[in-house]
Amino acid sequence: MKLLITGGAGFIGSNFVTHMLQQHPEYQIINVDALTYAGNLKNLESIENHPNYTFIKADIRDVTAMDEVFSKGVDVVVNFAAESHVDRSILEPDVFVKTNVLGTQVLLDAAKKYSLTKYVQVSTDEVYGSLDVSGLFTEETPLMPNSPYSASKAGGDLLVRAYHETFGLPVNITRCSNNYGPYQFPEKLIPLIISCALADQSLPVYGDGLNIRDWLYVEDHCTAIDLVIHEGVNGEVYNIGGNNERTNIHIVKTILQELGKPESLISYVQDRPGHDLRYGIDPTKITTELGWKPKHSFETGIKETIKWYLDNKDWWARNQSSEYQNYAARQYGSRLGDSL
Ligand code: NAD
Ligand code: TYD
Image (tube, rainbow, N blue to C red; front, side, top):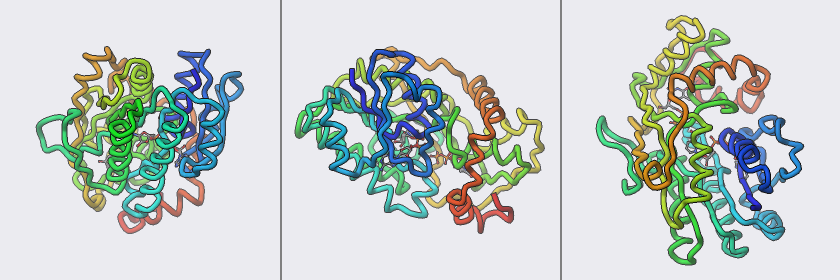
């Protein structure tokens, strides 16, 4: 199989490239990534010399570049490439629409032109909007995105659906809950809290810290997508989640306890505008129809993740880059007295 992975230098994409080369070493893997602030080829050092792995630096919005990639022969595409951070989408929605909607359309056109056997769109539970205290997201839950990020992901999902209905493109959409694990850029909650706590900096908790996310260890997300590529029924959506709902403040306190750092580092700051209260995935469809099961409990996954960040300080020192410092100043400057 010739498998094109877009966004394979990001957090989940790079874990997925490594997973696929380990599980299917005979597959040819092409990784296309524009290497934005979130892309990092260091994530792929362990497999960069694998004979069946090729990296191409290109933007999914670039029609000519994508045509060149697809024209060399691709069987399956898995699209991870996206702008992925909600807070950045509040500051600058423009690039979210361009990459997450228009970029998806460019890939869909190429997949149609070259008659791919499968197009998998890696999406998010955030397209469903926010849950109250009860209920779970199923594949039938209406799309009600609340942030520019989730709205742009929903836009991409609707195009994928339309290419299936209109052109018969063999597609799947996966909607996963919040991921955590190695190689997550330290702007997202878990790596941000670990890196700030290690530096004895203030830990910015939005609002009252009682918002709930449903956490999945990244390797479990990778096994689910692997299964969808091979067993997914064309046109179907699959929700992915491991029933690990936690409040944000629980996550922060767990990390502090693991690191032996004081709770006095916690700083409750101004809430995120439009902050979704709760996400919770009902994974019944993928577990019963495709036989997927997560391997990691939250308790073991978070310990492994903290250990990884402790062992790989050089990797996340990128949060010292000027790009990140500029973003952090805009994002947290007026919320926190401290610089991050
Ligand atoms: P990430 O921000 O870590 O990585 C995104 C990657 O896409 C980066 O390598 C970046 O360079 C690349 N990219 C961005 N714009 C591009 C473009 N125009 N052309 C080519 N490459 C481009 O994101 P992530 O957390 O790994 O998320 C990957 C996918 O999974 C996204 O589609 C996201 O919506 C989805 N998702 C993420 C989570 C999560 O918790 N992180 C949960 C569910 C779904
Ligand atoms: P995040 O990791 O940005 O993922 P998402 O918004 O896509 O779920 O945030 C997870 C939760 O943590 C979310 O409820 C917002 C909250 N949060 C904070 O309290 N402080 C922070 O500095 C960040 C980045 C997030």
